[in-house]
Length: 159
Image (cartoon, rainbow, N blue to C red; front, side, top):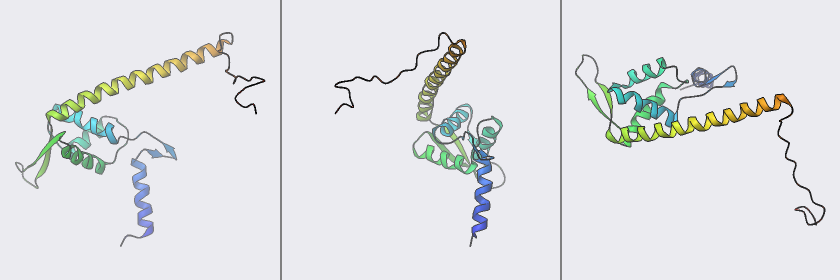
């Protein structure tokens, strides 16, 4: 039986690795970002789950939960983006080896295209904000604030 303090302690340990420290929210590697990262690593070579966890850790990507990596790999296999087999070639217990399928390669290409467009969108938004900030510091070219138009008669709020 798990006690309440054990559950709280477990949550505290998890939160240290799940993108939150000192009460500040940090990016997490999960969902499609985790899946596409796994597919990208598998594009280069087949790998065991623990090898993928190690590569993700070394890559400097945001925090992630290793259990989530294994769940994501199983989900990718169910959807046909990766395949796996039990490798019994080495001494010790059998290990599951994952590899990218043709469908996984296609999905990865599409996702890389989406990420490229998203990166362009974010960069454009950041550039626009920086340009707006620079114009604002000069004082003279600051864009006028847009006030809602008010009309005497027949306006939206007239009764």
